[in-house]
Length: 177
Image (cartoon, rainbow, N blue to C red; front, side):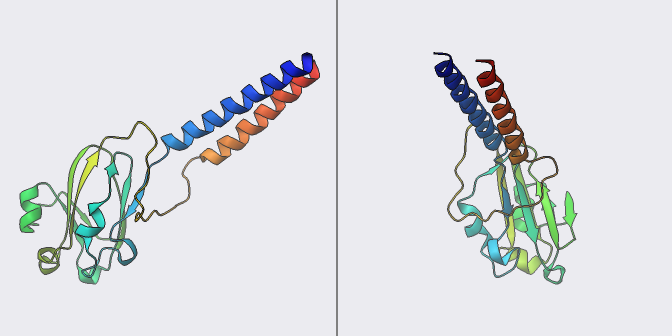
């Protein structure tokens, strides 16, 4: 009977640990969107098509990769400025050739090429940032996701710690019986 109780305790500990790990992964389900996919921010990219099936959420990031020779990227305040390619009063200028833009709040964001001809030919992006999803979220099939080094310990490190802690607890329970 004592061994049966120890097995039940071990199963409960393993299930709780697995649920904890799943919640960590779901909470960290932020997406890095590489604008334009393989072509990046380029006049040959169909940015409108690329963005059409994407969902942008608070916590996601958009990555711009571009050649400064084809124009820089300006972030604009309004849809009117975006549609007319009016870059006279940008919110921000991106000039580095590779830039990550965090989507930290809900609302519309407007990005255009500073080369007016490229902008008029469609090298521009508007993003509607949705609220953070409360449940798990499926990634669109065509989504390009870029991985980068973690700034803080990853969930896999926490998972390893949880497994070791669970095993230690199981050993203590078995020894106690």
